[in-house]
Image 1 (spheres, rainbow, N blue to C red):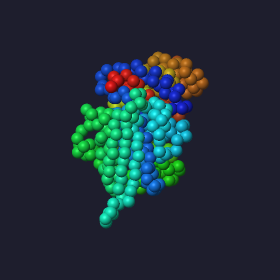
Image 2 (image 1 turned 135 degrees about the vertical axis):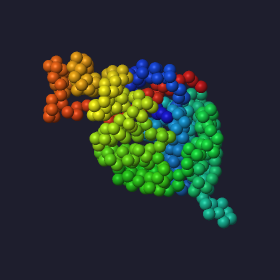
Image 3 (image 1 turned 180 degrees about the horizontal axis):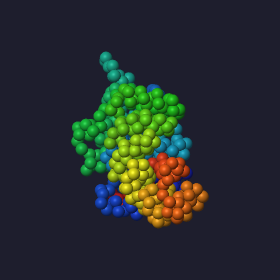
Image 4 (image 1 turned 60 degrees about the horizontal axis):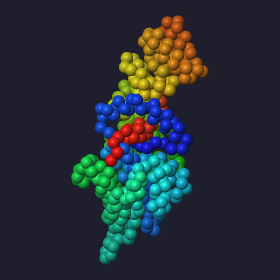
Length: 411
């Protein structure tokens, strides 16, 4: 599962991250299976009918598609990147798009393929019909070669939206990864259906503009469908943003492994447990994440937790973070801090000097460098040198997966 590079003001940071990650990633790639090199954009499906109260279905289809493709290890454009690309081009959400507009959005989002389409809700067929009918049409466009790769049309009852979405996702997966497309029966076992009211509340929660509205809709979705993983991640982020770390941790722990946001949930679960002082639980989450994707911020935070636990593995974790991103002064500071705490003054001094080269006005690094030169270790009751390890609160796996995709063989 992966995302494309971040856009706009994050592009410079992205380029820097790609360069820093290259060395460690090449090594990892030699011993791990590669993800597909092509990145897939899934646009919200537009409403071809007249009932505007069903616009949310267009987002539900695209979110289901994104989660299904990402769960199979395919590289997808993150929803926030997609939405930014749509916004930058002044395209109205749910508008009927021309092929040229679809291509322009895909290029702006750096996508190799784009999945888009429409849906329509119609009154129940006579005689005696009681359920509104749903038709979904989907197309796959090869952006590089400007040609279609597939076209699908599915029908069903509106009440069976989740089942119809899953059927479409299975068919689209068969186009992009036929070797990974299990039987539809197997696919449905790992992608259970979700009741419509839970889906609608989840989508309305994603589109809500205030934290209060988001919490209301997402909490309702989670209550209506307790096994529905996606609202749990969003509720975790909401609570993490308000520093309600206990509630955030509870929600992050409910995010399923097949969820698009599973790795990110592990990252913020580790941070939540760290802020709560539950260091062993934090270490467990971050160790699991580091085994999946050894990003520098993950390794750094794992090291910070291990410092609190008095674990000697803290230093190797910081050293791996430095190898991955040698430009960040915090990683050198943390390595120096861990070394200083265990009395390795010479090595700690070298780390603090490296940190100060990158951040000359760092008062704590200067203080601890002086302590190293004096061969003076931690002093009981000295609050100035307690809990100085530095954690990272931003998670960005985009550069990692983008570079991994670039190094993968083209289809």
